[in-house]
Image (cartoon, rainbow, N blue to C red; front, top):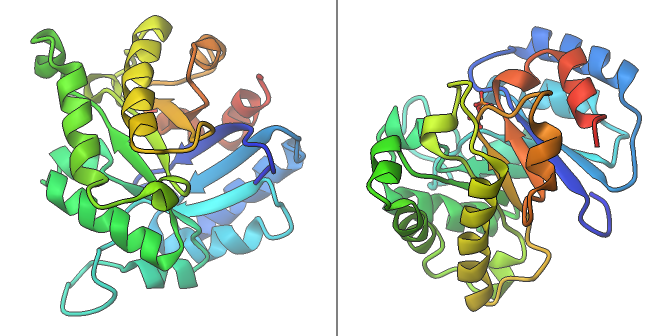
Length: 251
Ligand code: PGA
């Protein structure tokens, strides 16, 4: 990572790119994207591809590899799950927590996001905590209340030290994978709510808050120009290595 936090481009591959496809992706991406000061590149491959992606990016200090999810228990009878120590051993240095697909497809609760954030910090992993409202909540004028509730649950018991190792992503659920992104001014308004909440709890001023939800080449510059937007968390538009290379080269 840069000594001074740079713009953070985070790629969430979701359930795409196994170890072979992921290694091919990284080779194509590296051929186009040199390290650049003031820019951090984070990649969240599926768990089975973590080791391959971490190995392929070795020697690139601007790149960090993270897991898309991990259980809060270090080990045990949890068929199908992977733990924080396991993903760290495979090369992860960060972990997504509370992505909307974990919350709304897999039924993850607010309380579980809190357990995961604490387990990640104990493991020395950087949690990238995702928060965001559903369309009905937005239409009911409850965006700020939902985001604050999610922050309170996920960060209960996390002190200023833990907040110093955290990144937050505002990802309105209605914008994820729909092609419909938040307008930069709307994103900025929610980012301000998030920043105020974090600042009141002693978070460092340089804690990064990302925007996510249908970010693509056509809107990334405007979204990054919005006040308080320190980077982007991108799903669909990060899956093509040349397309993603163009996006991370756009600022
Ligand atoms: P999208 O996904 O860019 O495909 O909307 C974003 C995310 O889920 O993090």
